[in-house]
Length: 410
Image (cartoon, rainbow, N blue to C red; front, side, top):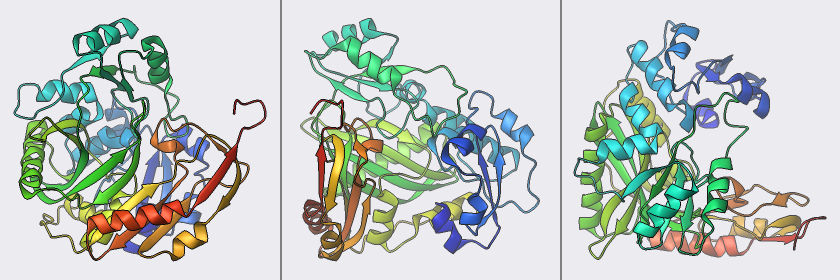
């Protein structure tokens, strides 16, 4: 985001607030040297979701502040609190708190018209096993407050519930989170079957404006990590209309005011009715922002700044072409060689190629978005299906060869 803001905003116009632990873990001390837009980096309790007033007290209101932008999942609540305190548009603290806890969001929507899977709080392996038994031998186990599919597992009748519980409760992002921890909560949910999509919407004072639907491909494994996104999702018109209506209901039910909603839905049952999986009150990850910008000829970050600065709504607009990303997921092991990246960059329709590994790096089993080894983005004037094919062809040109690391199983 800072790289984009370097081209959008004047020099020295951004104040970055971050947890001291994260500044240390990610080596962020020289941030203003790397990004011209950054005026200063201020250590602050941005992840103290239980007591957002502590951040409000710690940060004086800058005299010419125009917007408070939530960048990471763990700062959505405190960003909303700062915006409220400073009289600026934002999600609203109550809405932000609902969006940051999947259990609170489920409970808030239980009596509304938003379809969602059956669910229950998970307090241990026994509650997970009992829920699974009552739901046909299948269930989904997930943390209530993580991102990037971290800790999410699809359980069948023969899966070891105790092992699944240990994995989910141990999943964390130590370089992205403060060492101070809020009590963790977990959910067990009914496992639904059908295509998955996400809906990205720019909301201004509670009114949904620009909206995009992203089609998703997901690993066929116990860990449902996304392997690709396609924009706009090639869906029937009535399904897209129902997703917009569902998103409008969601915004109204949570009381979300201004910002971006990134919600995930599963089209379940014979009629493919959208069922809410989860929703975040921030920009999407996984390259979706790039796909939206390419497909619609827009700048989604500028759209977010527009509503957070109170400059008015962002109206719907049609897609001009298709855009797709495909992620690289080589076998686990130590990387022996990487080849084909240059060929992929020169392939038809390719917009970007990114490699997250190099020889000597260790590729771990893909259990969350963080273990993916890179991606290819492609666009096509012919539409989203063509963009998906081009991205897949280019990704297939890249060979990341791995071998068992010393002391590891093959």
